[in-house]
Length: 333
Image (cartoon, rainbow, N blue to C red):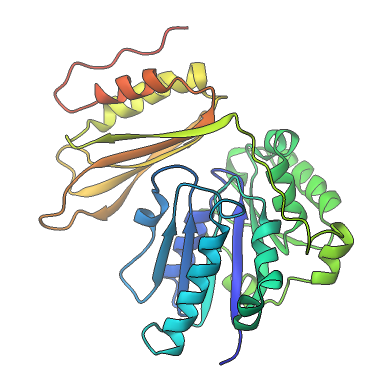
């Protein structure tokens, strides 16, 4: 059996990875895709947001970063997928790995060269990096992982260019070219991108990577910013979307810089579909997701990732967003 091509989809928190992945899964491109999802924290949201009404095999990896603590799980999952494909139990012809926004892609890519079995079974096709035009300048200044994601990219997709000025996009593009002159740069609008320019491009060049990072095949050390933490809000009672939006709008005015990423699937009163709520710092919004199935338990779950977050204020305020409860008060300045 020939090697199975693998695409590593990376990008900092909130850059649009899941939106792009959903677009790829929905398109009629003829590819049969297995997806490996990795999220930071104790509970995942992205797996619930992905299209799952076709033949895709979706594997979720939580409570750690794919580039360090759960890397052994990645090797195991890739091995299991290959064994099931060989046995005819699963049918897929490529793999997409969506990393957590806090992942350094280097150790993930390293897996395909330092593990003999994985190296024989899989071919690392490309690293595709999403870059958020609104928040990337600050992220690239503050976070080593964001810099590594750009530096290792074979393709770079700029997202959210519609919420900034054209001059800002041009400045960002110039910065990205300086950081990684070999990567082709394009824009993705709401997950729309040229699929043929992302899959089967044979873009990963080990020799080029070794020029950037000579210790790529031997250096396995990787540290995260311990100040970045996460927590989860859960609620079984229906929520009021208006209250959630009003409360979080007030919260981000005070704590927006600390909230690096927040996203959730919400059970809203009198709405028969999931409501997907997402935000990065002070930029947030909601959208209608998949319908709740008959008899399915309708729970709300929202994950917050950030630094020095007002956890108690958020949990208490969201608990008061239950439909019919006393409206939550905004944060004190």
